[in-house]
Image (cartoon, rainbow, N blue to C red):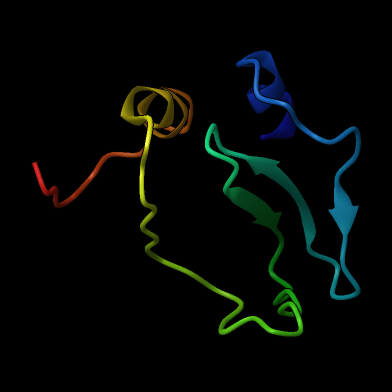
Length: 86
């Protein structure tokens, strides 16, 4: 995923990190600066000290530049909305 994102002109870290449970992960920022973490592995990641949860199935962001966010989430990541305020 890191190599794929890099090929799509997304700034990625030089290395993938590994947590104590064996899961591998890295973070990128979307066009508006929101941190997005990609995790691979069956080991449950340890949540950040102030995190509400270590898993997420849905997220929403206040979007200021829809075209930039659509390019990242729709075109690069292939996400599709299942409901919309349009």
